[in-house]
Length: 160
Image 1 (cartoon, one colour):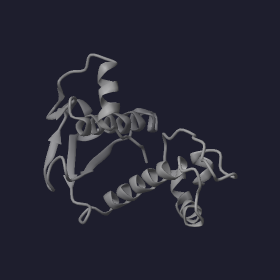
Image 2 (tube, rainbow, N blue to C red):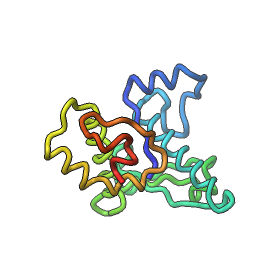
Image 3 (cartoon, rainbow, N blue to C red):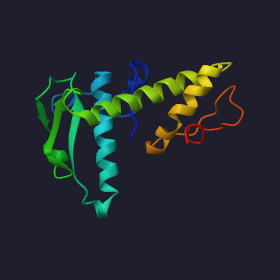
């Protein structure tokens, strides 16, 4: 799993660092949700390019929201790494791997909330133990300290 997120402040900071185009196909750099999707797509493409001598390909399916279930965006510049340059949008009720991505996002979000807590309750610690195996699936996470959990010094250690 590759992680990508932007809030409006992060997006503004990223946009101020370079002269970005107005859009990437129908995705707008000025919209922080579109920007997060653009960066996620580029991260996935770069990761795929690092595999199989740069010849790895994928069919990319994104949770509905930006577009409704069954719709697609064609970004020809992402082909052939993304099959036909297509970004497909689907319902997580129909495409079960999207549910795994939703769960991974929950795990990362919950971890971020727990790592800054002054004190972890027994329930917090139990949750960390339960979700720990998910961390091994994240490819691009940074190590961070966890307050109140003495045996864990990093996200990867704490979740593995």
